[in-house]
Length: 92
Image (cartoon, rainbow, N blue to C red):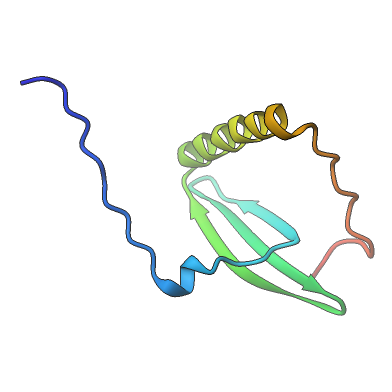
């Protein structure tokens, strides 16, 4: 039998399809997992709009995929200027 690629059907609920806005990312980790909190900051407060928990090995794949996509984007559309650090210091 020839090597056949079997796809995975991915479903997305309407609520997730709209996406979430984030202008801040907080990353924490333990030995077993990384926690990425995507935050929408509108002073005087911020709200976590999504939380992703991933194993260290999976996070490494995510970081590589993000880097590759950023490279492809900049090759097509030009270099992206890095955003300035948020004003007001760390969030609590």
